[in-house]
Structures are given as structure tokens and as C-alpha cells.
Length: 345
Image (cartoon, rainbow, N blue to C red):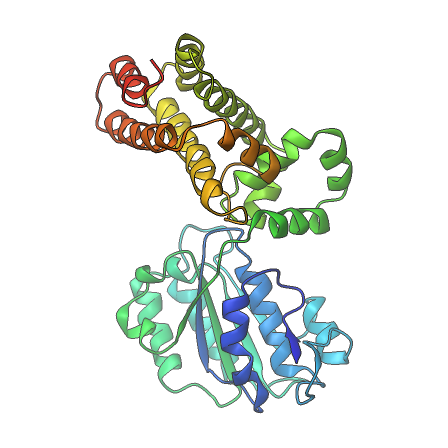
């Protein structure tokens, strides 16, 4: 059995869908739309897909695809193949019609050393309507050798006429272990940070929503430090909620964590909802995927300290408080109601 896209972590569903399609020669698509948040691996996928299309070992029954060793793979993966072209907005807010016209002119030049010519269009959902309509002319009647990979955060921003001419593939969030692995691969010194400052590393991974790129950003930024502080405050609050008679201390932790702004309260309460959700699901399934706790054993131990009914009540109360804070209700009254509804005070 082949290992598809060895340079792309996770996304097993996407790989399974594409594996049989890559068994035949040529490209299974003349165009693809790849959707996912920033840092989700869209560009990595596009490069791996381009290399797989042109890999000298594509027809083999086993081994990785792309092989990463043949001349085509090496050029594409190093970013030096003249036949794999990245198109972007060059730091402009939108991708304009002039860029698309340049692409359309280039499309009619035959590939240099590959059988295919692959265009990776970054920020395709930032194309202006004029640019999309200009691009549509090429999508409708592309040269047989041309493949277009449109990368976007929101495929809904593309015109329906564009979306109808290409299947949409969606990048999947990575589980925490693979997010951590991606950070370790990409960031020099990440192993040292993980060893010397595990809370910082954990905060970056668990606050990234399964995006390796986002985790890398958080690891060495002020925002990452803020995420670490938030997680510490949430963990303290949830732990105090498990203590019988700990209502006053829990209230103090809740007020400190929410701070003086409505946005701060929503962030804290949303994170608390993830933490309580983890404790609830781990009671039912030890291998359940977790959103807040990186240490499964620690989460299970804390979950055991809660009666099931209290966890359910706490989750409902925190979720209601998130909604109340978002609707502009009095934060302090909302917090008092939260602890009362959750049977903490």
C-alpha cells in the first residue's frame, strides 16, 4: 500500500480520497480548490500533490508518493521546478486581473521538463470578480497539460461559475500530537522549548485549533504568551470548581480570568467551555479527542473529582455565560449566575 503525501501530516480522509485517483497517468483534475484556515497545510498539500503527479515512481504499487528522490520530486519539493508556478497577490489585498492575465499568457507556454504545468494560486478567494471572470476563460478550456490548484480560506468567496469547475478539498485540523510533531519539524529549538518550558509549548499547540502554522506563530509571540496565561487561569478555575466548598475561590478565579472587558470574558469562558467539555467526554471514553487538555492523564484525574451531574451543569452554565456575555449582559451578574447554576455556590 502506498504512503501518500509523506510531507503532509494528518488529513487521512483527503489522502484516502486521492489515492486511487493518482493510480492512473496524468492528472485526475484540471483544477482543484483547497480550502482551510491559514497555517492548515494548504500550500504543503499543493506542492506534495504537484510532486506526486510528476513523480517518476508514480506507477509503482508501493512506497511513498511522491518518492521525494527522483529528479522531478527534488526540483518540485525544493521550489525550483520551472513547471510548478506559485501565483499570489504580492502583498496586495486582492489578487487582481493583471495577475490573472499574466497567468493566462504563461499557460500557453508548454512545460519545460515535466509533462504537466501546475499553477498554485495562493489566496484564490481574494481574486476580484473581474479577475475571476478572466480566469474562468482559462478554466473552461485549459490546455491538456495545465493543472490549477486554488488555495483559499473560504471557497464561498469564489464565484459559483469558478467553484462549479473544480472539486473542493478541505484540510482537516491536526490532532495535538501531530500539531506538536509539525512544530518540532519546522521550528529550530522547538525541542528545547518543549523540554524547558512545557506550558509555553502546550499553549501554542492546544490554542492553534489544529493548525500547525498557527501553533508555530504562537510559539514565539506575545499572543502565545497571552494564550499560555489564559490557559493557566482557566485550568485554575476549573480545578477550583471540583473542590467541595470552593465556591469563593472559584468565583475569585473566574473574575480574575474574565478581566474587565467583554471580549476578555468571552475568550475566558469559551476556553473554560472547552476544558469542561474535555472532562465530560473523558468520563465516557478515555481515548476521546481533547480540545483543552494536552495531558490526558491529568484530565482524567481531574474529571474523576467531579460528580457527572456537576460537570454537565458546569458546561451548560459556562455555555450560557458565553452567550450572555456576547449579548451584552452584565458580566458580574452573569458570572454569579454561572456558579449558582453549576452548583458551585
